[in-house]
Image (tube, rainbow, N blue to C red; front, side, top):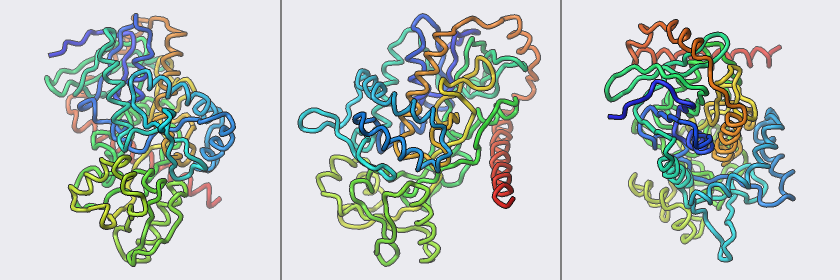
Amino acid sequence: MIKLAKKYDVIIVGTGVAGLNCALNISPDKSVLVICKDTPDKSDSYLAQGGICRLPEESDFDSYFEDTMRAGHYENNPESVTAMIRGSQEVINDLIGYGVQFARNSDGSLAYTKEGGHSRPRICFHEDTTGREITTRLMKAARARRNILIVPYVTLLDIICDDKCCYGIVAKDGKNGRLYRLYADYTVLASGGIGGIFENSTNFRVLTGDALAICLNHGIAVDHINYIQIHPTTLYSKKKGRRFLISESVRGEGAVLLDKNFERFTDELKPRDIVTAAIREQMKKDGTDHVWLDMRPIPREEVINHFPGIVQHCLNEGYDVFRECIPVVPSQHYFMGGIRSDTKGATTMPRLYAVGETCCNGVHGKNRLASNSLLESLLFAKRAAEDINKNYCPEDMQAARAAEKALDLSKYANVSKLLKEYKDTVRAAISAADEADRAKEEA
């Protein structure tokens, strides 16, 4: 059994690429605790198929910037978009340094693929398991660091704070039932998306927006909580549980969408929200609960080399992509809103940072451009760590103890009930934001 200390220099909630990259960039002389609700691989980062964007050359900057802004309906924060694009080459170099094996051309240069919404190929990839490749390499590096402790099955229940500052977290150990009240000079929320509150989602079911609800309860700013992306193509199934994603890259390489009569009905390379709308309109017109995706226009060798995971999963479900079309349907996929953070990951509460899908720094606007998620998570997590390193100072322990003493411990007695309340809090906030947006449109 892992014994936790009462105090850490930095506590990070989440073991996706954001949490891991933040931990890896904290000064090695600082103690770092990383917790996760389930096993470390239960993150959206691990599931990412398509790839990660990289600015191929300076001449592509304006085009990449415009593609990102257009996909986000120009509601993006230009400063965040610029920071992401400018930092993309450094991110890829960092990943290569950790041993990530990206696809290469015959001359050894990075191979790029294209996805919906992109005006040119600029996406690095590892087969159709890019997220798993990156997450696995980062996890190996983090576990090799003596100052980083990664503990699974520990659920964030609350933060220790007063009206001035965050001093740490309240968490529950799912194995021994122990309630932890842990101090940290800095706390980083990297707890992922909100797919677990939806019936159909590509996310793991444990990702239910707990950190989001906690911030709402403490008056920490949250932005665009109703900006939720639907992925156009997930494998249709009547089974319960997570929906299997059919990567954007499949359409980028030539797969086409077909109606019930197996006729093409849309431009597959439009941004995700536009393709999703087209699919839903076609399903309504046809009276069906899915459309068809045909991968046969892609050369067989390319499918085998680039999409082996998709091929195998479809076979497991009874579909041979080389001989037939596969049924696909839109499902909840990504959260563009979240805890307000700046370009260094800082929230509106001192000593509290938020990075990755759980935060909103405005980089995605109203709709995320394909394969910007891993890049955004990695880049701003590193910037958060660098900001902590640069401005590091110990917290006021007297104030921290007072904040802990003020906690109502009865609130955490029934974890299942509390987590359900958090789900309801997030759902209610989404509904209120939707209603407010409708009112604005009607005004």
